[in-house]
Image (tube, rainbow, N blue to C red; front, side):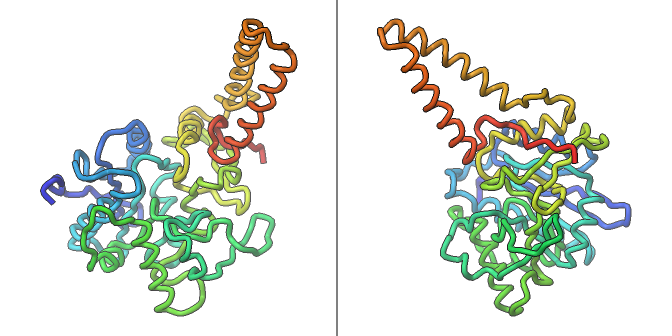
Length: 342
């Protein structure tokens, strides 16, 4: 491990009840989205440890995630020496996460799970689809009071938190391999714990946040989040992000799919709901692009002597169809969540 940097002492965040919380992320190079995360933490008075900076090992997408497990293990091994039985560690990805609330609020939510570790959840069973049938059949209480299957039934390892000693116990036997997948690693631990404890869904050792109380993963779930006006707090200019299915307000929003929406959500956190015009950022962008396309198509049709109206209508139809398709899957243009006055 000669490429890694020496591990520096990690600074604890002290809660009002005296418990300590360490926030850890792993980033091997600078990035504007990492700056957003660290700045949001600073505004809330939260110390976040960025581990792995300038690590030169393989960072090819999907093939270098072993560094996340390696550095988190290094952290919890250091912390278990000094941590009390109820002290906590938070881990999130570095390049695609926003924090929306203060630590005391986050930990109060964590306590309601009555579990040692709580993981975020997502729509897709990644990276091993064949493991989906092995998951327990969980139920959630929806905003309308009904009980049903969760929209996010599968573990996501891009955002989770738990008691330091339990995390250290889970990671004790891990042997570093650069090409390991951290989500596969934690999924296997969760399923192993489930089989060990038997049926019953969420376990004492590990719970899944299927209602997005703490964590909201956005891949395949962009439609779930609404932005509502709220009182301003440090690091938040007056917006509350709400899961429209469960009514919960997640403390962390993880853009585990396309990253375009992160900037729009961050804009709302920094500037509030009043900063968004009536049409919305995405709609204005779309209309501007359509107008520009009309002019381009017109001049091209004149130069090529193509019947103007038919050509324009055909291309506009294709463009609008493409926009709707891209927005459904990637949130390419609609850079902000749906707004609501509820």
